[in-house]
Image 1 (spheres, one colour):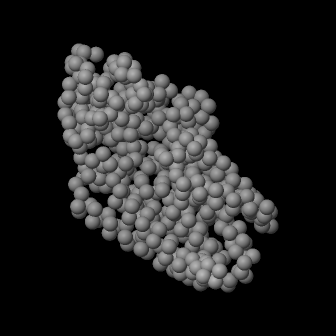
Image 2: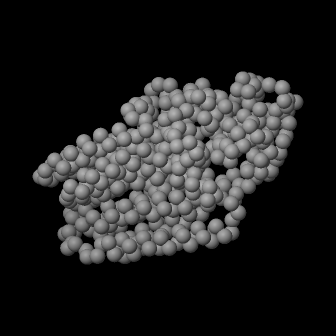
Length: 495
């Protein structure tokens, strides 16, 4: 028993938790800075940004698909497009690792400010930060806008739930909401956080007026987008998932489905353990009148994550920051609250220093050792096989690689069947591309779909289900091959 007590004291010491937190942050930073680019969304975001830089107009139609080129498109992540295109054009694919590293660095700063700096018990703050990064930091390991946009709610928590709310914060949260509304469709959460912060202040006996004013201004600020109210309707339909392509997305894309359907793909044991821990802490905090609003929000976010797996990280990160006062209260029952630890900002800086040093160092070493195409998850063979596709072709590419075809093939006039944008397609087209890649789809159905869509080229894995169809079809010929990737073209006039 004495050995267990000694081990418990060692594990809960500030120095031990600080070392653990520093190691977790540094490991995450290295992974973010050297992992080959695997996310499918960053490529079409950059391609749309390239088009915006050339035309000065935000997208309103699906122009990258030959199946539905005029289908309406609201690009709720349009603000990421131009900088992604600019960076990709200058740094090559490694630009996305730079974005991921910078996004993770910003997230670490925000998490440190809302946990380590604010906790009454330093071990509680250190444990909360380490847990948040280890259990819910996966979204920050890529440049996907969905992950980078998590910076907005973290920043809103930092500003809205502070002890004071001076006038300058009203202007700042409104500015953040404008940027958020133009960067990602999760922007309504910012208004919700401000309302919860106002309720939280009232429960502490403070006046909620300024926070309510900020919530109202933030709500008005969400209209400052190129799409106006159409963006709000888009977000609402996406959230409901009851009609049209939104229903198809919720049923066909696993991360939009419930937690158990995403198991093994985007959800694992760590996610479930983290959500259970957050739900238990929120349920305990719900009995505390001072924290009832926070706890209710966290429970709602956990429930949302169970129904839609893509919200796991959002629910976990916000729970780790919003429920910190309750974790302090629980520790108070075991030991009296200590005097405020001085130099919390210095401690946070020491905690993050290894991450900020190891990330750039790992990136620079990898950048020297790798060729540009080696930063791609499919590797150089994908780009080499793509070069065999003729200019102006209507090319089928797998769902996960179609965005790369849009970026690399766009200047040559290549268009794709469909890609991971999802919402700029009809339900029939979205279901068609998923069926083309499904091993259970009959060969005759694949051929019929390709013929009906006037597809005249295909870039697919050589051992994939679609290659097994076109490789034996006399109307198709092998145009190029590199390692696992094969490029096929249809004979002229055979459609």
